Length: 210
Image (cartoon, rainbow, N blue to C red; front, side, top):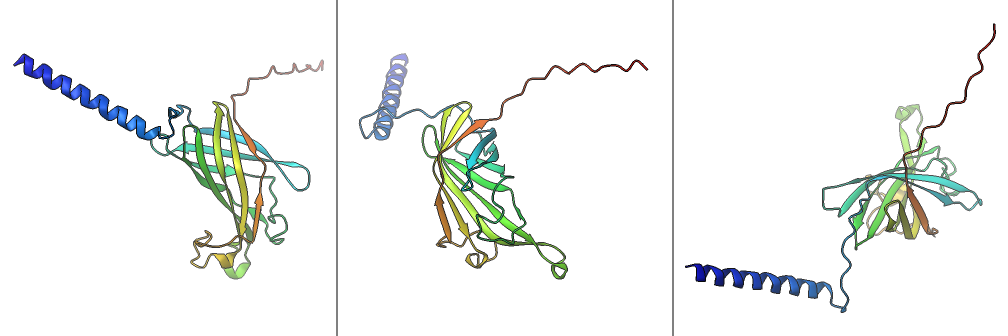
């Protein structure tokens, strides 16, 4: 009986090794060992400075959260307080820009597909109870890559703008197949993970002699 058990265990072990070797071989079709997935997490607060056509730089920040525990999909909410409210002249009547909302989806060991959207808003008049009116939609897309635990770089970064008539179903998202009225290539952007800042030494106050 023990002999039979040993034979079964040997067969199962051999089969497991064979399957794992075969799967590894499929992943390494080009003859190279596939790079293991990074254990680094995208979760956290990230900031960067975005160059503008005016020659200045504008701060952009993202708060990234994981969707599940497998590190495949992340969602993000961002702020771009110094951005061009008019979308570089596209909608001069715009009064504010919404938060950035988007996703990062893993495409490799250290790479993710990055996609976010924001909206240019104008306050409507009393006839619409002063609710907001969307004047344009902007999508930012690219490839995010981990460099180290505190640095993320976005490559192939593009800025695409759409008008309200390219949102026929009214969901405030560009319709499928819509061609942006403006499409610009953005420079490679290095994001830094927001660190914990040290406390300062308070400046002594001079007590009045009165």
